[in-house]
Amino acid sequence: MELSGQYIYALTLCGILLILFVVRQILSVAYTWCRIIFLLFLRLFSYTFVIHRHRWLGPWTIDLIFSRTIYLVANLLCLLMPSVSRAELASRAGSLAAINITPLFLSIHLDFLADALGQPLGTIQEVHKSAGVMTFALLTLHVCLLVDLEAVPGLYVMMASISAAVMVLLGMTPLRRRLHELADKSHKALAITMAFSTWQHISTITHVHQWLLYTAAGVICLVHAVQVCLFLRRNVCWGKPFPRAHVTSDGSIVRIVLCLPRPVKIDAGQYISLSMISSTIGFWSWVQSHPFTITSWSLRRQDELELCVQCRSGLTLRLLQSGERTFLAFFSGPHGRSHSLKAAKSVLMLTTDFGIVAVLPYLKKITVNYECRVHMVWHVKRLSDFAPLVTLLNEYLRDHTLRNVRRILQISVYNERGVHNEGFGYHGRVNMLACAPDIADIMKSEVDGEFITEL
Picture 1 (cartoon, helix red, strand yellow):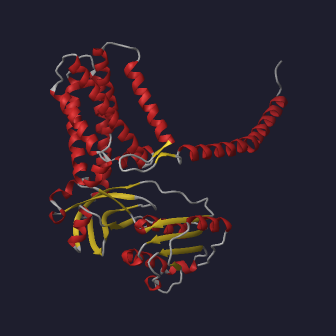
Picture 2: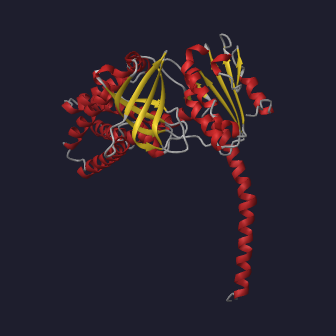
Picture 3: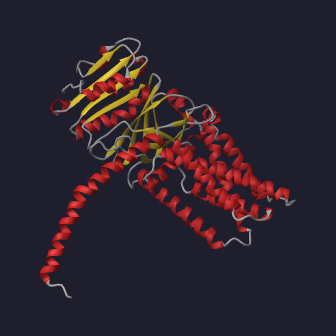
């Protein structure tokens, strides 16, 4: 029986109405419940700590332990299933070590890889760390089995194994914190040694398909070429000088103004990796790259980036001691993702000490772009220790454009060792309190809507 045009029209109309009903009613409810379930799982797995931050370990959450367990089980299954002789087991361990180590050479800096994959830098660092430890374990098993089989490990196998062992040792948290710059340079040098040794060893094995090696090497070279091209685009512009970093010091804080040859679009919360070249700050300054949060923000592209650096040791200490100078500089970035606040009706910012540097660009962006209430809480032990940051905040609060913006803004400064109102001028936009903040009470007040102050 053939359907006439009227029946086809009626069925089509009913189908459209049914689809609209499903999309409007059923899918919206399903989306709401899926979101609730997702948030519950996120709270359970991502915010429940099994091991808190420790000198040697942590912090470890449930999802981190779960993902590492899956990674370990997958490698064990590939290694042990099906059961084979010890000679074949040694070969499998070496092959798995080569497979695990290959992604570690994809990027000069993990920041680029995090941006390319759309993942947080912390996630990429955890993957990098886990793959490195797994590679070291498999290499150790490979060498031990070769020795047990009375086979002498080759020179390149021993070079790769020793390099991996030293990298794992220097990667331990206490050593990395005490010897950061030495550990960073050694890690890069050992990574090059390990890559060379792995290539030399695998290329001599007859049963390994050569096209696999060249494909992996080609992909790695392509990714590195993209990074180099992006780096050159940021730092080189025909007819203009290379980037220059103007450094000034104030107390224990260093302010850097980076002049760029080409304007760059910067979003709130992003950072750059900066290298400065000068014998004043050390012979090895040209191989050092440090991440610094960008404190300046604008709707337009910027040809000058402002950075605030907290002095600790190493390069930052030498910058502080160098006084007011101008250095030749190169940078990569901007890196990191900016959190979207378009749907927010109220924003609470909690920051301590130097952390206001990361929050200030968001404060600028919100008051210019969005119609929402903002309450920023800044907790310091002694406000006088952060005089340059007070100046930054004052410059923003004195902006004449804020007078014409109808938004709600409140800034509360908790200064535990006294109140110093004069540091914030006479704009009357800051509440000073001589105590430590009660976070639970502040959260409750925000939920109840007690903090409302018009600009």
